[in-house]
Length: 304
Image 1 (tube, rainbow, N blue to C red):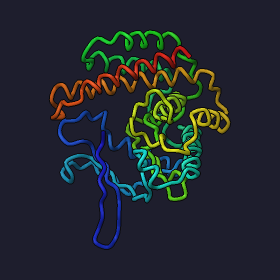
Image 2 (cartoon, rainbow, N blue to C red):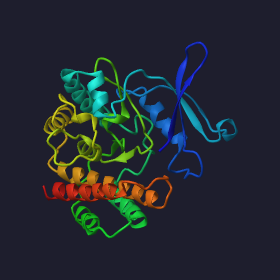
Image 3 (tube, helix red, strand yellow):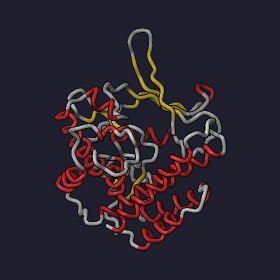
């Protein structure tokens, strides 16, 4: 993940600086120029993003390419406690609607008209995702987990027909948004996974993260949406369908894809923990169980 810094001057000016992680990195995975081009292109759209102040490719300045954005005020709701602290139940309900409306705004942008038509391949998004993440699984798995392999086969065999390619954020969830005091989405952050493809992949992943009280399992144990007042997943789905006009008859496929991908991502984190890259290896049995629970959730969603 790219690094974010709060930058201030002596007279009250405030900005945000984004740069790649320290140490060795893959240029393709941490392309600051690409990320700032996306954000800059969206400033003129209905998508709330922080205006870009500047981009620097000279690595002698800061050790890596970086860009600077205007600071956007407002909380980022990462936990249930954050949601409880900043908003009451009615405010949280309104935030849920704004989250959906902002996602619809992202998917309403014409990539060609916005100057982002060459951001990525427009065809076969889901097939490419399945190949990419299956390869990641083969490289990072720490033990046999037949359900992950089976899900790859099942999902690959029933990929829905993709409509016109749209901008796909790639990691659209509540804790990648800045929320204003009034409950509006003030800015969408973390565009590093953005590409062109099937917009329903974003909605599916949003629903994966949208945990609610009473869920038997939640990917994030302290998810902000566990707070009282946030809309149920049915409301998220129905509002997106109403505002976007898209056919959601295959939505459970995209939810399954989201769970499957997240299981593989967390297996990679587990593998790095076991290799000692993160120091302490305590709690890894629980972490391994979460991967298995994600695979089971993907299985349930795929079966409808």
